[in-house]
Image (tube, rainbow, N blue to C red; front, side, top):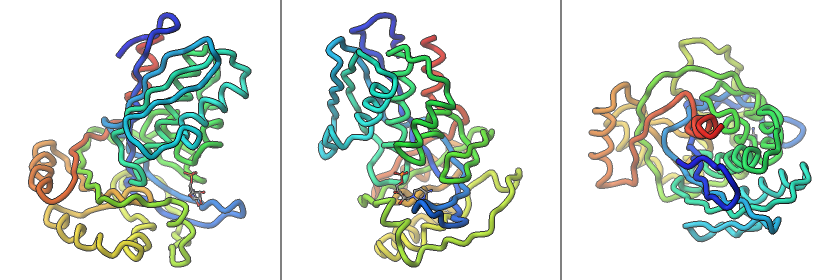
Length: 288
Ligand code: C5P
């Protein structure tokens, strides 16, 4: 990690992935969104963004993977939003190193956008308070605020009403089917369950549980049934967000690594740790 002291220095910032340990849909809103209850678990693994502030005022982005045109990239939209709203004269060159698969329910794009907001707030010396930055993030996507706050959280509303939670160290095996799922398509599905009873946060429900999007995702992609069957040999599989990532949860690291190494001959997998506090926040405070 590098702390930015002056312009032209490139600084590297993490954009961690998240899991939705459970996801309940409790209603539909008039603005087209849904009312949710979900438990966001921040992970110790994710994308990386490198920033070099420039004097030209331009926002340029390069990326290690193809298929995300600059003008559509949520990172670029986040940088423009901040620049235009706060009248920033400077520009920035952004290098995006993508590791989180897209359309995987792991919040990759949202986390990248949050990292842009948090990093540029610092590098452009905007002086925006964290809650205001999270509100700006919400304009870009429902999952952006949790990454701006940088802590595992119980979430309600569209996913922006957050209560920080302490989940402790947990270990997960993520399994990535080679399917990219559109969140909007899942939420628009006529058979989506939208009437779950709201629950109250308690110690007993601060863990993995039901995802109301799963049945619809399995209807859309019946081939995922086979994956679920294979994962059940290791425990109860859960789905994150609107898919396509499924995960297994473990109390101890050794068993998680064993499961990952067994599964990796058939699937694209990764063993990760859950963290309460995101690496983005650690980076921010290290640079202050
Ligand atoms: O906010 P974001 O761009 O991530 O959401 C993508 C789409 O998912 C929205 O356009 C909306 O159709 C759907 N969505 C929803 N309710 C939420 C979050 C997302 O209906 N709470």
